[in-house]
Length: 389
Ligand SMILES: Cc1cc2nc3c(=O)[nH]c(=O)nc-3n(C[C@H](O)[C@H](O)[C@H](O)COP(=O)(O)OP(=O)(O)OC[C@H]3O[C@@H](n4cnc5c(N)ncnc54)[C@H](O)[C@@H]3O)c2cc1C
Image (spheres, protein in one colour):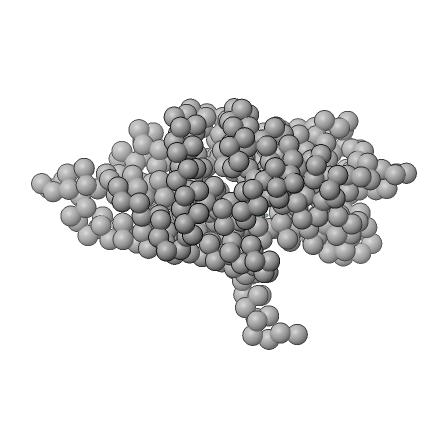
């Protein structure tokens, strides 16, 4: 197959990096991609990914990263998701969703203790935003943290937390001043999941992403020392918003991965499967689907890289990250669905992994900001551009 991924969008180093990563994924992940989907993936696999350097491409060298930036993280997200979506969801939750708030707002001491072992894959992180009564409206958060001497006592519940029951640390958001708006009354904490009062209510039984663990957690008088406060007290909402920009760009990279493998399988299948005396690719009902799939993948990759490049230059990417995530996650549903259609009955069986990618892709118009919320954010940014205050 022609290497259609190495086009002008990418630097020579990014192309080389992708090829090395593909070789690693083919050796270490692909052979057990279906097996690990019975879940949970073996912890050792995350350690291997960390040791190979693929947890830390966007982290500083001081914490064991390679300081290459988000444009490399989206390559990692795409390549691992192209093999197993749940595994990358777990990897990314640890190193990006948990890791980026620490990288940007943590003290040197906090980074050394709580980020370095995540970058090496030795420990696992998670991010705790969502609650039973709080999803899209993060400002309505109910989990509270109350000062007790030098410590903070956290009470509340966090739901749908990727890595929740397997993580060593959680970056948890809680209200520290209920008398003011959450924008200034929310704070972020690094919580040791071995703390007294931290418990797992249940692991959710998911439609897809079967190799990951996604959990409902309870914090019952969990004591957090003040040196585990992330950033300043009252800075939580800012940390959360900042995190979401890198998260959404990285998720867009994943969405390209979920869509790419079914697309490649469908292209090959359309040349092998014959009906009415011809390969089915001879029928426009099939080949035009393939044209649309290729177009959506290229467009999605360009949008995602735009957001990542801007982030790496230190620019604000709220609109670009939302556009990339919205577009790629919606087209991932269309591409995976069309791929299954091209395979006909075979696509509906587990003989091909396409059905797994359909189930995995279904999550991403929901997690990390639903498409409805992203449309709201994009139009808000557009009006700000036209009518600045
Ligand atoms: C597998 C999985 C993994 C996850 N991992 C994590 C994690 O690691 N950490 C974490 O904190 N969270 C995680 N989440 C939570 C995820 O981010 C939320 O599910 C998501 O933000 C939506 O919240 P919700 O499910 O409560 O839906 P709700 O906010 O209740 O929304 C329900 C519906 O109403 C719509 N809606 C809500 N408000 C508006 C509005 N203003 N305008 C238009 N439509 C609106 C939504 O778009 C949606 O269609 C995960 C979720 C899943 C399913």
